[in-house]
Image 1 (tube, rainbow over the protein chains, first blue to last red):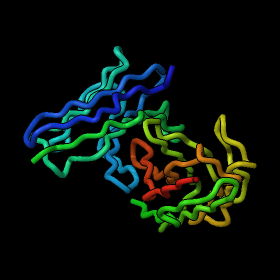
Image 2 (cartoon, each protein chain N blue to C red):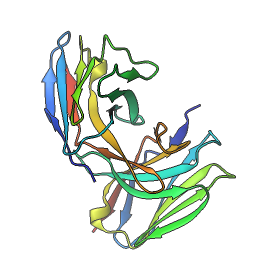
Image 3 (spheres, rainbow over the protein chains, first blue to last red):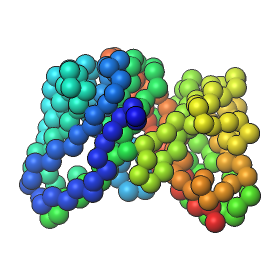
Length: 111
Length: 116
């Protein structure tokens, strides 16, 4: 079983839609959860970071962690064409530990 | 933040040859990481490179196939040796910067390798 599972998509939505991206994981020791965004021909860049369970909001983005279900989500409100990218979830047991990445979900927001 | 550059950005190579990828960071960092990103697969850590010591390789990756150099605190190279088509992938270097509550990884733009 993979450490982190993520639906690769692709996901295509109209501009203004709410997007939900999800990952599941198997290791209950994970405490740090991150979402990276990767534009075509670029390296991933950190979008959201969450420690343990709960929600975190930053503008149009909300990250949600449910440790009891081993499930994390990223919600994008009022999606824009500039949000078109691949979104990777990542997690680690502790700061400084190895990061485990999902396969990434390819998102296209259609104007 | 950290600004990372990689060379080459892409290359097409013949089977059996080797390619060395360079990674330059705009600040001094203790650890640098090399990842492989294959289509449909997770970003996979190849090795961790500390300046002044041997690189630490993850399961499934060996020094003979992926030799790494780390001559100083801002530079590293990864060589993909005796390449085969299965080595076709994007190779990314990254660094870890300590924030107040977490470590943030910054990635280079990647090197897109195609092996014929």
